[in-house]
Image 1 (spheres, rainbow, N blue to C red):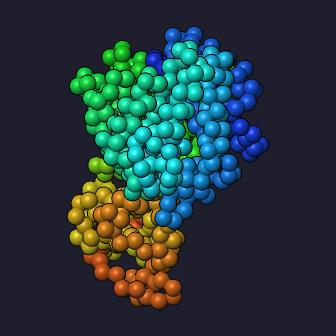
Image 2: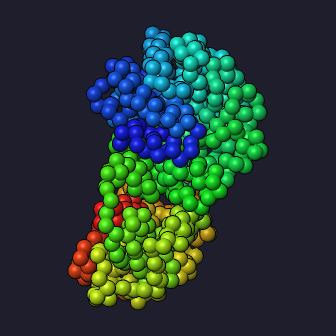
Image 3: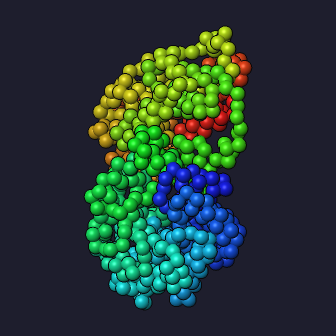
Length: 606
């Protein structure tokens, strides 16, 4: 799990939801940490003991185990993006090549002292982080570890020496009071990575000191590989299971696997003997009740994670407390715990997109009676378009869950094919009106009436067929995803925008943006930045650096964002005793996070 926040209340929710063990991440072992390191558990300092002891006691109240992840950091104060570079060698947290033997001994001692402190915190286990470019794993990689002494990567014996000595020192300090878990990369995915056979040989060397092995992949120090640590929506679920299965066959300690594993996959993998257990983070953040729902035979009640990686962006890049796009209360539980009771109200929600459904669901949970009006013949709003590509099934499942969450609700009446105007609400005596009418696509005047210019939403929903050769104008998240979808369908796609190519795909989390650009390159989508679209008579021309560039196309697809219809929105200002605006209609930030959070907040305080 991520760094503690909100007094541990979100941890309480997860352990109440049936998790067997919860691991608290980011336990930093470095001595003399500078003041700017405020987003990590300072496991080198005594001050952590009291807070962690309270958290351990809380977790144990619910018959759950708790562990702490231990790792060492680079003392440089930048974030991941700052430390990334394009040199011949990855900018890992700590490069073993340049460490003196005295420094090696100090780091081993730091881990051992932190482990001893963890015992006094009342936890049940330690997770030594050796994956994703963390220090122990770096000794295994020939590209990173260029040492020529007994800690070099020339042999498995030498490459594993640091980790063996570290684990031995930790075990000496804690004896058998705690379990020791170790996280490893089955594949670093860079030149010099140990082969799977070498990884297995390494695990056999550390096996006497550990009780559980975690299997992962990816490196945070190379941008193109960072998404493999926290797989975005564009990647398959369960990407590490086959490697984990091969490792498990060769060792005797239990194996757990990470990597967007679904509950269905977990059942299958464990039944087939490919893993002994699975580890989950984002799924539990999206819905802490995921385990209990599965055990009670109601998995359809679980709010699915959409793998947007907003949570990762907050903690890894923004160095901010964790938040979730689909679970509005994550990290803010205490704000919602003390709202108190409210008198039941009659509420109208206008719009059945993600914001409208969230508002209706939340208001009903608060005891209000809700009429939800949607102009289309289905619920889902803009997410119906967003979930259309095959690689975005996570969004489709989320839409299905939102609809399920209000289906059969006695307090929610859904009115489809009902386009409601402000005047339609007069005389209905609603106590409150929540306006969630969304926004409208930005379509330039010149494009209207042209058969060769279409809106991206119409293409995604199949209302308009894409031609063989297309130019997509607008390389935000939606434009890039449309480009990927069309390229996978065999179209010749050119993607243009005024922004630089390095910013293509912005609007989502950094990990997802990196992954999306990599997939576009793999599909040979032509990406051109710094491009403007001009009109010369009846011709559409593209200009870069004040010069016209020739782009061949049969069709132009516009993905220029959306904008609230201010006149339409403001017409609702006096539609009820209390009127609030949520989702895309009250902001320029058209994200799922904003839609869900504004709706949940509004419905919670009415």
